[in-house]
Image 1 (cartoon, rainbow, N blue to C red):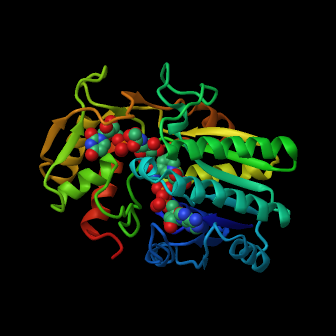
Image 2 (image 1 turned 90 degrees about the vertical axis):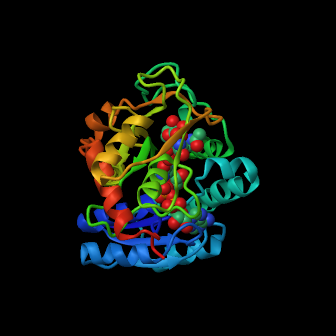
Length: 336
Ligand code: NAD
Ligand code: UD1
């Protein structure tokens, strides 16, 4: 089976490539390297001892996508490629809509032309907005507060309409909670450009001495210690969720939706404490006001994925912090 992985050089994509190769899939990566480095794929090959094909191509070019499909007999696509920074999406929404929506429309059109109708899409828990209750189930109401989230919701809607128009499509919408951690070898991990926006990459930059102090956004939420609570999931567990989704996709399920989370929430202060213990470094922090658009708490009900895919997250908060720290120490400047 040959799987096309769009965005395969990125954070979640590279970890998924490792697990695909470990599971004996043939892998073709399509990435324009706008937020990644080809070095991640060299490391994927080192970890697995297997090769994959890399096509430097942009989803904004239908011609480039079609060339990949002409040269390879693809059985299914895992579609990670997209821009993902929430703050940036507020300042340059058109670029987000163009890249994420137009890129996906081009991909789907080429897939249709080549009669490849199996796709797994990287959606996000952001589509649940501010949930009325917890844990979050797949049938909860959907709403978004920023252009990045809107691209995820719009792509979900586009894929639903596509499925309704042609029942030969098999589409899995995977809603990720908060991916963190790195491969246990420390060879691949998250390599944000510039100052990280997300909590764990920021903490690890503070631990390694690249940033002086963490800003904690709000300690007056209705949570046990007042700071935000999230369902952090190890990126390798997340990657394995995709591996478990593929057989489901090949069983012709139509359109299916799964939460990929652990079902547990940890607060910002709990994450800092765990990271300090694992790294044996002090993480200086200061409390600031709430970050606009943040919700107090968010965690998944992952029972549907367990029941229907036979998948559940296994790794602990300690694993997440230890593997992030191992990657950060080995690669203080990321892939550069
Ligand atoms: P990432 O930025 O590390 O990877 C995305 C990859 O897509 C990058 O390698 C980038 O170069 C590539 N890309 C972007 N636009 C492209 C285009 N037009 N053509 C070809 N390649 C393109 O991000 P990630 O963290 O690995 O996220 C992967 C997917 O999962 C994204 O769609 C993201 O929105 C989604 N997601 C991520 C998180 C998270 O916290 N990381 C949470 C929920 C959902
Ligand atoms: C954010 C995005 C979400 C996206 C996800 C991808 C926002 C509002 N939401 O989720 O759409 O899918 O990233 O991973 O940006 N925090 C700090 N200090 C920091 C950074 C974060 O205190 O420097 C806090 C936040 O206030 C939050 C928690 O840490 O309570 C987690 O934040 P983050 O890692 O950015 O993830 P989300 O906000 O859940």
